[in-house]
Every structure is written in C-alpha cells, then in structure tokens.
Length: 415
Image 1: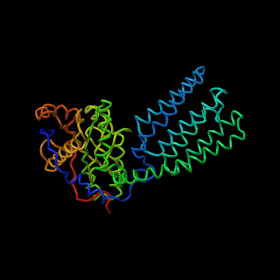
Image 2: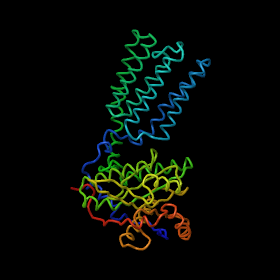
Image 3: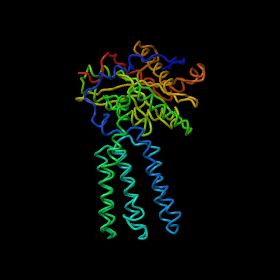
Image 4: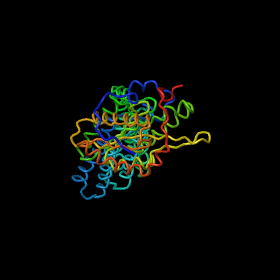
C-alpha cells in the first residue's frame, strides 16, 4: 500500500464536494438531526458559561464580605465555576443538553437554599438569585418549550425549598410570580427575537439530509475552532473521508438501505470528532471532521477505534452483510494556519487523487486506507508515508480484499 508522495495544490472542489449536489438529497432526514428546535447555535452556546460564572462571582462576593464565617458557601462558588468551565470546554449542541445544565444549577440552588444556614433566608432570601438568574438566562437562550420547562423547574425548586423549610408565606406569591412571569413574558420572547437572524444564518449552513454542517458551515465554525485551538495551544486534526460506496449502495439495495448506511456513518463520525469537534457533509459522499486536542497519531487511533483497521463499516440488511470501506486523508493544522479553508482544500484534493487512483486499480491503493499529507517539504512526505500507512493499516492483505464499488452520479436518498 502506498500514499501520495507529493503535496497537492488547492483546487476547486470536484464532484464529491460540489456544494450544489447537497440540495438534492433532502428526503427522510432524521428528526433528531435536523436544523430545527433541537439545535443550539454556536453563538448562543458561547454565552452559556457566563451564566454559571456570574453566579459563582456574585456568590463569592457575598461569601467573602457578608458571610466569611460560612465556608460551605465556597462549595457552591466552586460548583458554579466548574459547571461554567464544563459548558465552555464542551459547548451545548442540543437544546436538551443546555436545559440539563440549567437544571443542574437549580439543583445546586435547592441544596444552597435548604442545607447551608437559616441566616441566608432560604429560597426567598439573599440567594434567591440562584433560582432567578438560571430561569431568566436559560429562558432567553432556549427555545420556547424548553424555556417553559426551565421556568417551571425554577418555580418548583423555589416552592419545594420553601415547603421543606416552612417559609412559605405572603411574599412567596410575589416571588413565584417573578419566576413564572419574567422568564416567559420577558426573557423568552426577547431571546426568540434576538436569535432569529442567527437561526436563519445557521439554516444556510446545515445539510438538511443529515443535520450536519455543510461546507460553508464548516468553514465558518471551523475558523472559530481553529483560532480557539491556537489560543489554547492545542492541536487540531482535520480529516476528510470519501465514502463512494454510499453512492452505489443506494442504487443496489434501495433508498432505505442507503439511508441506514448514511446514518450509521454520521454516528461514527460524530463519535470520532467528540463533543468539541465539528462534522460536516461537504459532498454527496464526502465528510470532513475537525478534531480539537488530538495530534495526527491520536486522531488515527480515534478513527481506528470507531471504524476498525482497515477502515470499514459493516451492517446487515435482510441477512446480507453490507460493507463500506471509506478512504480518509488527515493532517493537523500548523501553528500559523490562517484559516481552515486552505488545509481543507488540500486534503479534499488529495482525497480525490486517492479515489481516482483506486478507481483505476493502481497498485498499492485500496479502500479503507489512511493517507498523510502536508509536510514542510515533499521529501518529508515521502519519508514518513510508509510508516504512517503501516500504523494505520497493519495488514495490507485485508485492504486488498475490499473492492471499491463504482461511483454513481446520484444523490443519496434520492427516490
């Protein structure tokens, strides 16, 4: 087996990555993967950590100047701070996950209101903001049904805390009204209005057939991820998969089988990228992954862990075993990489070269192989390619037994 021995110049996307082909494949999208109510825009996800951090900062202020004799308060400062950092490291991609973060803050509020000290005044006392701020903030960030749920949960937390401490009274009515009224009448509609332009923009960056980003979405969010990795001095691995088998699979076994294979591959790619990574469908049978925090070798291990060695996806249809053998090229970004577009263009061009060679049945090329590109010199690529190939595909005889199915010029899922 061999890999390409020259650095391919960036060129215009070929048939596998032409954006116009994506619009035709719109049948039978998975409900949970669409660009609808379940998705959280990256702009909103970046705001979420500040909710927890603001609670932590104000709680620390009170603990330091008002209750220095209650060291238990610092546990809640730590709790909110750690939760904020978690939201920062692993941004919410789905509404349910963001709601869960708000619910965790309200759980902390319950223990703060009921288990620290009577001097704090319970749920309606000085730390009432532990229920009010999450209710307001998450009602602003979440879609309506989730906003209603977080407001209801905050109200329940307040009433449950008051009932446990026996502090329910006349003031309870006004505070319950605050938790029910302001999140739903003020924060929720304001949030909807503020998110509208962002939602419209995000819809143009989503592949409707899979719910993944499209090429434009990957370039936009990929640059943000690249710059974040530069700031944090973390590596960023970029992988481009060619899955030409998908194109002929639909024609040979039907649209339902093609849909099943596509969904399975999407799940594998999302698992490889992780919660902080990005996955995009950049062509009819082309998928691009950005994997932050992984060097090239670790990215190879992650790919092998989820797709095997050699790279294959196997599943059964009516008792018949179906096998898909992707081809992937990958590399890590340079420290001075200005944008993700140039690297993605290089890898895409290299992938097309490998796939063309595979179709022509050139010696040393096979489905399921991993290729390395990008080096400071062409000689460096030649020197390291054999070792890299051996690491990614230990048994060449396995790859040789996998034949690449012919590419058909049809969109996935087309009837």
